[in-house]
Length: 142
Image (cartoon, rainbow, N blue to C red; front, side, top):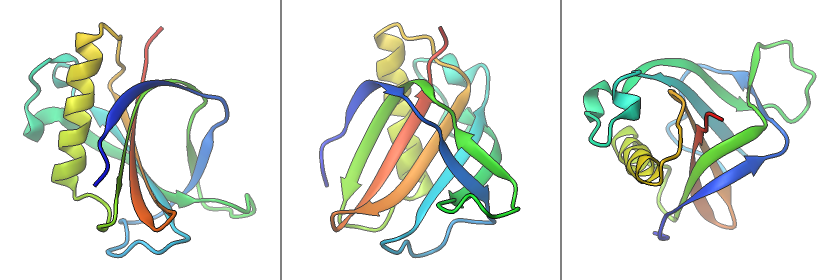
């Protein structure tokens, strides 16, 4: 597993996804998925959030829309400023417990650095260069 690092990211173009049901059990090399959560307003600004209470509800789960032709509802990770964390692994994508812990560490570091975080969370899963990639995007409030 690769070491994670937290960075400030200026996403210049949105990443668009079409609505799907649940994430697949196995991620193939050509798949890309995204989860979009609203976070609990109190827990999302706590330096010691409670993992069981951090995620308020899932707003959207989606699959990468490469064609733009589908009539399925779409959502995007909008262009903008984010606190960004990425983890690459030869194992399959992280379980919810693991990516939630990654998001909590990102939140702690972001608050320590005095970033103003929103209560939204995007998690992106894909396969690249023989490895599974999990990315955590946390929008920054101006």
